[in-house]
Length: 394
Image (tube, rainbow, N blue to C red; front, side, top):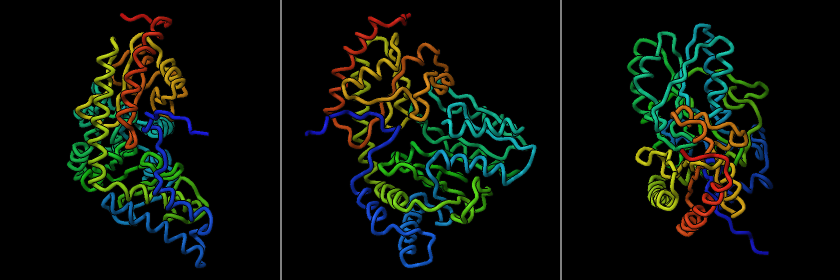
């Protein structure tokens, strides 16, 4: 039986494990299945795989091996950085800052801390989703201990001015200690993630966004940045993250990171950018009353986020699904919730337009033929859905 052909344009939700990455992982499921915390040779062989990935990640991020903490993914990494820092400082008068367009794995910890009397600020953004720098400068107080701003927005693909923000924080750090965290989950495939270049104290990433396995990620923690563990049990990761090492996953993470050399990233960016432009231009040319919510001049080449006026986004998603084209209505962690995106609201997009939205995210395996096929089938889908939609185009 032939495998069913499909078009996958939801790479910001997850990516397929690269064949080379899978080959690196397989031995640790079977004949190299030792516990990396065991003292015997079998365990030490597993530990070697963990240490190898630690070196690969440190090299990629330009940090020391000791500054890498393995986690289950960016959600855990974000929680560990934010809540771990607050727990470590134990100052009741703390103030923390984030933006209004962050992933829920940042916003929810902030809201929880807010309930526990930690002062919080949610920065407004411009119409394309970028943080308002002047508002950041105004927001920083004498008791501010943390600024957490994502590198790339998962929904619209906007790139935040991380280096500019770090420079602002460094100037203030001469008089007070402020730590800077960035969720780089959506940036790793496309942008410079050298932590010294970025000027961050914490950085989160996930394996499954870079053609690696699900359920594994890491947190970069600058050597002198204080955090406390969120879970107790073992003594792994210098007592900062207890739990048996996911050796196969960690090995896969290292293999995925190892493929992100500068030349490959540049080649992929160039290819994906051309395909994204083809998709955007094709949709705008062939479908009336459509709004592009992604700023192509300041976004990763993968993202194309649209609002198709007069049509419910969920209806478009399901219609495309029937044609074996897979897209999203927003962040995969929240898209099953039919509430309109908080990111779009923060950008000033009206509720009815936010509900008309679809996110296309391309990857390294996306082809010209696939983009042409989407441009071919999407216009009649939108036309038909508008005929039966209760929404009216103003």
